[in-house]
Length: 120
Image (cartoon, rainbow, N blue to C red; front, side, top):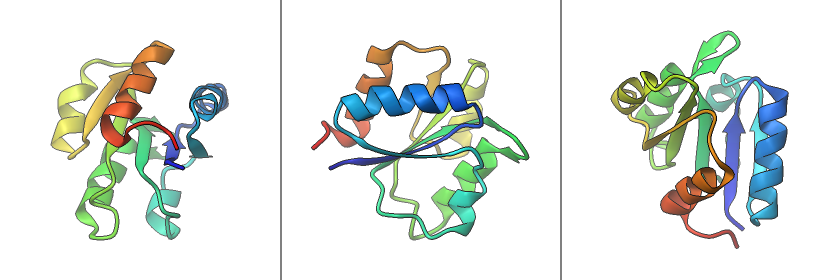
């Protein structure tokens, strides 16, 4: 089963991600604090969905640090933000892609499929 980690400090968004991606057959873990990605050993994961604006941390900094570490640099990271101006910043931080909030469920599933294929 394909595993996805979601980092967003909005519980409603995390719940929506769990519903959408869980129904599509993906295994989903979520965190409200992005620092956990840098401090805990990550479980095997196929994709990280990372919000730009997190409480106490900047998702762009976390993305860049993950992409610099040998054990996590291969994991695709999709940055999320309500601001379209974050797209070039996300690419500069070595994100693999960008998804602007709000997004349609179809757009989320297509983005996930693009990077890790179908669930299962």
